[in-house]
Amino acid sequence: RKMVDRAVSFLRSYTANPKGGDHMGHIGGRVLRALAIYKYMDVYALPGAKNDAIVAAALAESKTYADDRQVLATESNCYDMSVVMIFLLEADSSKYRPQIQNLLDELMRRQSEEGAWSYLGEAEGAHGDTSQTQYVVLALWTAQKQGLIVETEKVAAACNWLLRTQSGPSTDNPNVDI
Image (cartoon, rainbow, N blue to C red; front, top):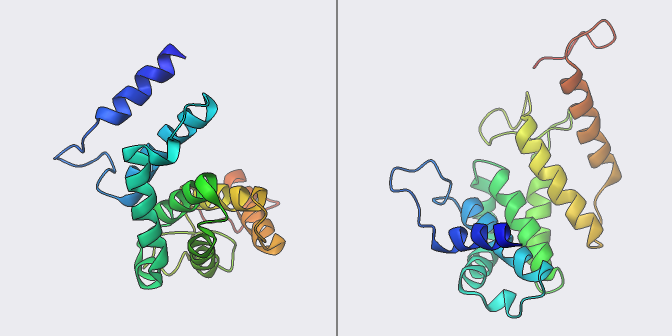
């Protein structure tokens, strides 16, 4: 636990690198920090997790972000939406259900015909991006665990895309373009 205490202490004291590169300039970076602190307090049964200053600020920012469908529709990546969705699901899936549904709807809208997710503006995921797809799948898994309806066909398409692209081109799978 001593190691985890030190890590959380670091997260609490950390301020964004003015040169960038640490993702604290994105909602996803700030929410990921808050999620780590929230889970730490939850795992060690420390009181007041949702009232922690960093957690509370991230919850408020996440709610505002996920309430704005125009912002979600223009978000350049799926990382931030996925991390925010996981955070809201973990913190209080009932309270934040409308925001979670907005995120889920936008993520589902962005899935390519091949089953992957990618950066906005890159032909809406024509080739797919493994790390973006993994983040979305993790958010979908968390949503399903919390009782939200996640379309099985969409998950199957993502799994099939990951299997096809991770195995690379072969005689069994000659059309993989990675």
